[in-house]
Length: 325
Image 1 (tube, rainbow, N blue to C red):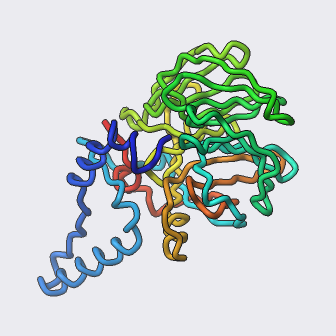
Image 2 (tube, rainbow, N blue to C red):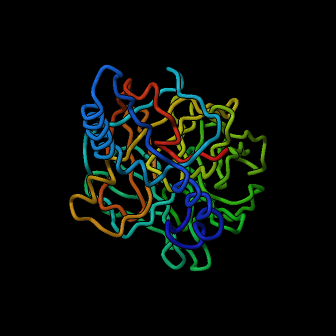
């Protein structure tokens, strides 16, 4: 959870993505042996062109795994249908997003001197209430448990608990995660991420670590776990620097499904929006089964529904989302 193009990228990740970009390549269709070389060349060129058009955004995030087999039917892939679009503050560096009921959202924003906790109207994007954090703190993940909002900060191992009805009533706490990136809750424990492949369980009363799991996909660690949301027994995680969400079993840390949201960023870019940072922000309205997503410095927030993608049964995850072995 960082400035997409600043400190965290240069500190820990630029080499990973550079290596991944350099080592990735398109799979080539083999032309039928009964066709002529000329026909084979035409077929191959047409396939490559159509693949580039359909997956152009995916290629920005290639990563290579050695000896990774093609995917079977499990885990599954999902894309999205956009149900509704809502205004979102394009100056909000979204780090945490929570649905608060009655068409309101709670949002944590980052950047030094601009970090805040705010309550926002879904329909208009208007900020109803806001607490500006001290300029020494970089706001990060946020979750709501009862009447308390829990927020973590970047690099300090410090967080805050707020009264959801009065942000001026808040207390500070220390935590034992390596860093503070994302938070979510199932109503009993709090789940936390620190930008690595570790998913933590925290006691909501003491904020001490109760346990942790290494998040894996096909025996490979899934790093850069960012903003979190707990949905129907799963922890959903934005994977930093991608347009992908990993659906994780909190019991064992296994990723069983992936959600591909590349169309949202692409749509904003095609509409002339610039200065966008990464996809970050998942909120779930469990009463009406509504899923909301947005990104850092994005001018829109989206209500989306999932659609399974059977065409990707034999796809390789490294061509869709960057995973590191």
